[in-house]
Length: 474
Image (spheres, rainbow, N blue to C red):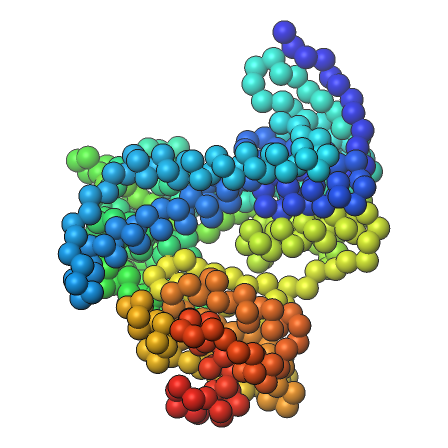
């Protein structure tokens, strides 16, 4: 039986229930807007279902196995066996708990939930196609709308994700056995996180990258630590080579690459993971119906209030461009919802941290020394090597550092770069300092618990002032 076309109305229509969309919907409802959230797949979006959470669960599992197998120096001798199916079940349990929690939170806050794919008909009407045969269509009239459709893995010519041996990150995270060998195309943050994780689980990983190093947006001393650690784990890198094709070879694949000079190489593996980035999802929205056109990179452009060129339509998260981070999407979602409700809010991208969950972890926020100079500051830099941290040494994780960048004249903290264990957690202190315009004296004068990794932030601030106790001053 085909359902008839139903018409409903709402104050705020949110399209996409990822970390941007569901946060925007809940905040909109909290502010008194009649809010409807449309999701075609699963609540929580890519982050909770196919990205951030599953990958970090597997990274944790790989870390446990690797640490147990490599703790002889600590007097621990073990030979752990990895049951990938059981780890997959555990990961799925984590995901299910979080996604069901999102749905419950939306309902508890009064958000109306619709399953289906939304497309605009005009600036105040959207058509919702419900999934499944005979499920019909629904029309939603709205005063304001927030586009939060996220992104999908970027495809490259010759590598189709429909072909079984060609994997996206989402497909890799569904694995029920550890591959013996894998060719990874791309040494950005996704490629590096998954390569490191697989190497710890025993996979022979070969990474091919068009550029001349890993993690192109990070400083050289950070890249060097992470790349060296991956090489110690057995990851083999081939830089300056672009993947051009793949072919079947026995039970696996052979990936062909080519340099700028035309030199061709081949690398074999059980499968090939393509991890060259992500692209925004806009093709289902029929943006032309409201006079919107993505820019040359496919993103929907917005102002500092998350508004598009159509006054009553907002865009947040990956679909709106960099930074393509889940927590940035959530922050943008709150701004969009508050502006939609008439609140005076705006985006501040300066204090949005970023983290890469490699070994060791990387985390950054605000400005680097070079960026600070480019913006007209005279920066002063303080650094604390983790080899001087009692807590890092007691964890047997002393590789890395904490760096703080500040304005020399005022002492105001402008940014920080961290590489080491739990860097993704430690960066919050630096982010708060940037957000609050705290000074080096504020950070250095805050008593930190001993022994902790967080002391390295305090020491870096002291070092920038020439007052460090546990490391040599510059």
